[in-house]
Length: 156
Image (cartoon, rainbow, N blue to C red; front, side, top):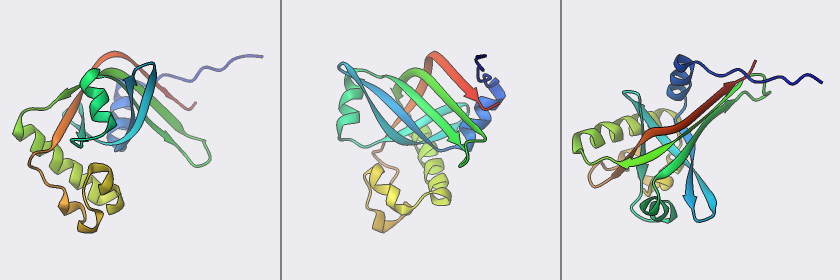
């Protein structure tokens, strides 16, 4: 039997794929096992950004170890076309208020166009108030710094 290897994505394909999606999974390192959670992300100026609530398991894990693996994927319903990207790196706290506001505005803009207000609860906000409830002050934003290996494969 001949094994078929999936082709690797080119850098421009990776960027296009990341821009086309707004949900990923982040694997955090907790003790002996990974902890994986879905996240909305924003891709701005070649950088991935994430909003965190100021409570919960992910925040506690991140305080102890900011090494993560991010997974972004797409699968056609019939699996005729697909890609998956896995990137290793660190999440770094964004301190600059102008950068944070820019990220949050883009995140809300994307969400209003693509997601139900039900997803607001994942951000710690009341869904009944809609995406305008997403307040910009005192929010926690992390950006991804790629350090380790990136694996990006696609359908043939």
